[in-house]
Image (cartoon, rainbow, N blue to C red; front, side, top):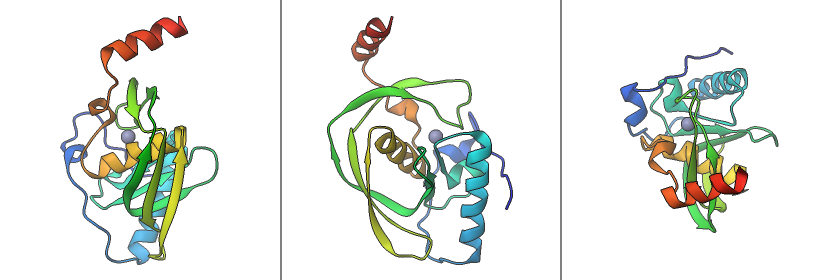
Length: 158
Ligand code: ZN
């Protein structure tokens, strides 16, 4: 187990598309375990492999309900909408209000290669969307809410 370096800011790897995982082997398990250590050390709620410099379709999420490992994840269903503040371990010191679905269903493999279905609502839905976006080179800054929504939310919270 080890802490890996989180790639930040303008690191070009963050814009790259990750490749599907084909081998569910020791290398994958080490990556997953290192990602877990790195996530907890950074006190985040999700991490994609690309953020530690590995272009594989692997993400982990923990919104306080325990760790979920998602390999080759796909969003298969979304509903509703939410506007909430979002940040990213790869964009330290910043945040923004994004538009995300309120609930999502995600199909993904676990570390044994078995396909499972995961449901997320609220923060968990945001975390799933955010991390899966990383696998296609997208950052939350591309999902910002329209300015009028941001202005309205800011007024409500003043
Ligand atoms: Zn992120």
